[in-house]
Every structure is written in C-alpha cells, then in structure tokens.
Length: 479
Image 1 (cartoon, rainbow, N blue to C red):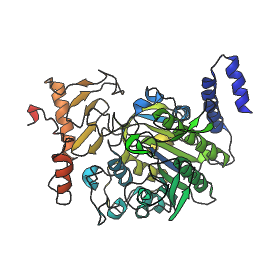
Image 2 (image 1 turned 90 degrees about the vertical axis):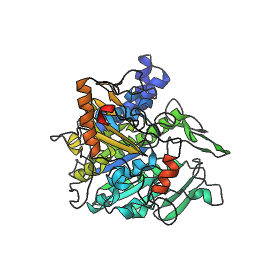
Image 3 (image 1 turned 120 degrees about the vertical axis):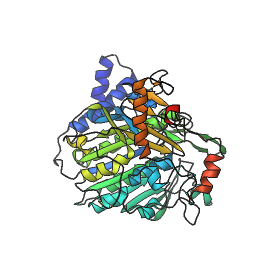
Image 4 (image 1 turned 30 degrees about the vertical axis):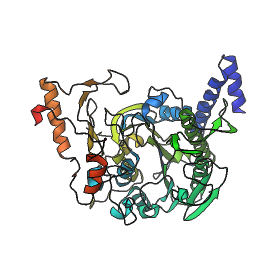
C-alpha cells in the first residue's frame, strides 16, 4: 500500500520512475525506523558487523562518489558515517586486524602471501594463535555468535563463534558444478554440514541463514560477523583466466529482481548489496528487533584497480564505515572522528557490557560512546600496515605507504586531484615539526622484521625480490 502511495506522490511531483523507486526505499526504511515496537531497547543490543569486499568510499554517492545506495544513505543519515575510517589495502591483513584487534606487527599477517602458516601450508588460524578474538570475546560475554560469509583466515571453529555459515572455499578442488567463483550457485558450510544449492545466489544463501539465525528465539542477544564476497572480482566461470565483478541478480527500477543475472557490472554488485541490507532491515522490523539492534557496515580495503594493494595516499586503507542503531544512536550523519578496524573489538565488547581482557594487548579504541550518547574522547591517530608499508593519519596529516607526507586539511576525498597537499619535501618549520612528531608515533608501531625466521622466506620471495617492493621515503632531516 505504501509503495502505491509514494508512487502517486512521486508522479504528482514529476519524479522519474527511478527517482520514486529510490524515494520509496528511503521512506520505507524511515517508516521501519520510526515505527513503534513492543520491545524497547535493552542494555544488551544485538550487533552485526557487515564487511563488504573491495570498495572505496569514492564509489558511494554517500561519500561524494557516483553509485547511489539509498538504504545505506538512509542508514547513514539516521545514524552516522565516519569520514575517515581505515582497514588495510588487502583482505587477509584486514581480517586479521579486525578479528584480533591487533595491528600486523603484533599478529604478523602482513599480506595474503606473508603470514604464519600451518602444516598444510595455509595461513595458521588466528584463533589458534590468539585466544581472544572477535568471536570468542562476544561468545564469552553471553552472546549467541555467528560468522556468516567469507573466512580467508583459517578454520572458523577456532574463532569461538557458536554458529557459522561460510562459503566453502574448497569447492574448486571438488568435482561438480559448485565453484566458489561461480556465485550463481551456493556451496556453504552450515554449522559443519556442506549444503549445495543450485540456482541460489551465494549472497542470497548467506542472507537466508542470517535471517534464520537472528529470528531464533533465545534469552541471549546475538552477534554476527558477516564478511561478504561482493563486490570482489572473481574468475569468469566460463573463462577462468579472466577476472571481473561476479554474477549478481538484476534489479529493475522498482528495486525488484527481474529473474536475470548480470556479470562484470560493479554498480550492479553495489546495488545488490544495498538491496540485501535493506531486506535485512525489514526482517529486523518484522521480528521486532530493529530498535534493539546495532548495524555496522564497512569495507575491507580500497576498490580493485584503485585502492587495493596501493601504497599511495590513503587509497588502500580508507574504507566506508556506517553505523545504524535507531534504538540507541541519535542521527549525526557525517562524523569526523578517526577509526580503524582494531576499534571494532573494544567497541563490541563495551556494547555487550563486558570488559577487555587485562592479560592481553589490543590496539583499538572503543567508539561505543558515540553510539550510546555518552562522553567520548576520540583517537589522535589511526594506523594501517600492509607488506612493508605503514600509514599514519591524524585529522589533518597523513604519512602514506611510500613514506610521503600530506597536509589533508579538512578534505577527505583523496581521489580529487589537489585535495591533499604533498609536503614531503617541505622545510617549513611547522611541517618538519609535524613529521618528527608523527615519526615518534611510528617508532611504537614498528615496520616488519624481514629476517624473522618464521617469515623470512616469504618476505624474500613476495616482497624484497618482487616488483611490489616499496622503500618508504625518509626526509634527510630524519636520517
């Protein structure tokens, strides 16, 4: 009924079909957020952290880009979105940073090809090396916890989640039609059982599990970590040597599935993520959980061929990051505070009413007060580490992976030419002072030891002898 009402209003106002469809989605989400619920927000909210794969802020209209995402934009307007949030420029280092709350110099996952290995030659599960992970800590604080999506960091059972639905990454080694790179079909490990579903999109299968898990009746709140595949490029199922955006269902101008699929369409992938998140918000409303749920939505690194594996400026580590919590968070929109993904663990633990283990070291800073409306003292800097590169950022200044220094001012769109001023060679007293102060911080965040016996062979092959090698610039006055 609401759709036709908004359609009529759109036509009367002279809006296009596409425009009134977006208006419908935005107003529907508004109705969802504003509707009265029988259940009031509790002291222990449900929490979900959604991690998208390979997308930069510059791709979203929300951040000044071109791709519209009406659901996410509405969530940001009614919640908050961080103007400066960092992960790392690559997927596995980002996931290690997120799951452990530690920077790479502590957990040693420096790159997809540089990390501690198990006997099988694959990355040794972080949960076997570190007892306190995102999953184990939320479980220990009385949450029904689940991981739903793409793992990449070893055995899911090592991370302390009580439930899981993970993409079966061994599918390519098996005989049959179900391939991890062909997302038109789904092969999932659901709580220890392999489930094949033909003609069910991989993303749909993940969200179906998410809806089931979050609808289960329990006295305990739930926590979900959901690292998605989209919009990460994949091998073309018909041409494995060719890479591009995966197959996704096509949405019409009314934001409904047409029954068709499209491949190599990055915008279609972003639109489909937005569609699925919108459907999940509707699910929370229908099950009476929206007012008692906190949704965090972020990326894992910059977009492929732009920020991913890029040491320049903050193209690689900078990510979108939105928080939506209608029962807790007053709308603030754009937020200037600095955050990086080590902050997720302390934030979630504080929201859960717990405390961080005192016998462990974590690098993050909780931003839970921003959500709960309590006094908050933000970070002075954020940090990122990938391969042999280190980044450091304050609200104004940036040292990038090449060791270059930028005065960013109040700008946040690093993709705009001239937005950031390269002052690497400046001898201005103020600039020199800033650089020296930032270098003091970096002394506490060490570069990797290329002679570390555990990783020396990997460093030599993957970094020191490769075309990727970057020798960060050091100003003469620091030598």
